[in-house]
Length: 113
Length: 115
Image (cartoon, rainbow over all chains, first blue to last red; front, side, top):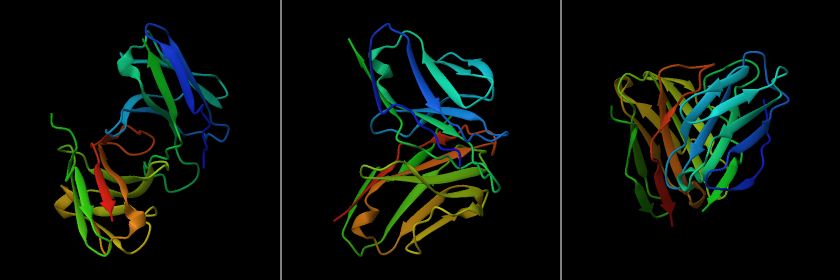
């Protein structure tokens, strides 16, 4: 299984750019890298997904180096409402890929005024 | 477009009782997943439906848990009899695509408390 490692927590201030890096040394050739966000008392919410290089959407950017053994979620100019838990996920390695998500502890981002 | 809905939002039952959780996925989503988070632990996969068929139930903890998906629409997760360790938040998610696309839409969860 592709295990992910990310910081347990991070602090930031409003208006700053936040970068959360995730390590996934066991990533398989066909695996995609996906990030989810979870606010208290809500279900996780899909943020962004990528395979290699860089992906950008209206919410965030995802940077993936050539070896794909890590990825960095970049949140531009965070606000207080970005305070949440951020999960980095990669696909299953091996057979039986059914789309199930494997969540780690995630990174708790606290944005301060 | 309506999102994934779950009912009830909160359930408190006594040990030994039965509880049934319901999930209504986004219309047209063939894939439906159940996850749960028990206190202090990570969110764990329980099972995956493709339409009305169970694609993967490797995460179901034991035979006290029974999941069904009637006609490939809504799904129910029954816990019978409930034990204290079943307390936690149960999430349902749905998606159109499977691997390698992991964009799943989660419901708000059902908080289950077993006393």
